[in-house]
Image 1 (cartoon, one colour):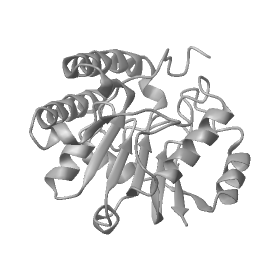
Image 2: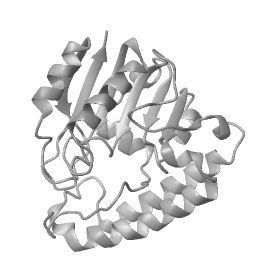
Image 3: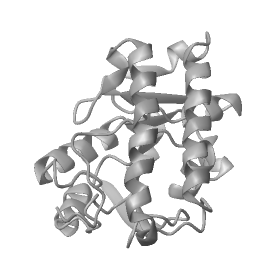
Image 4: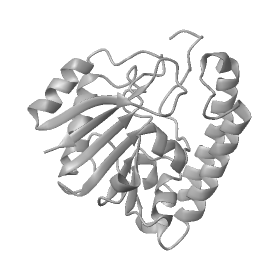
Length: 234
């Protein structure tokens, strides 16, 4: 991978806020209120905390949740510093129209982690964070009305191949109720490239009774990235 793109070894545990999710996935109050919501690969994001605080029935899943909670929080806090330093070296490549500046981007991560930590330690929060990883989630079929996956699938295309992505997308569809939706963002990799076999993946989704669309995202940031994947489940 070129030194002019974002360098990452392994999957980072990142922190993103509720408004970022609204923009990434073009979410509306009606969509969120439609039933149970699942945030897959939620990391240290505060989406579940903020969604629950607004009365939505939200759950987050991440493989790190099997570990002691202090470990997750320490890892997420360290990643804020690490990612900020990387972005500082590449800041001219990114679209800062939403975040305003690198400093505000970092502050948003800190605030998101603080809300995540507070919710995690609450009575309500302890029931909402489940250990689970793709492509085999620990949920029954048809459990959620809305399934989100942020900054994992496609972003790590250089580390996880086509079969992993195919199995993972079908798994997101499995846990989503008929008439529900799966939404995935971004569709570009850390190397700032579109997913090479997207047409093949979309065909597989259709074969499994999903209705895929590539739609505009409202969170400009990653170079070249402007869409999310929406799958209506039948």
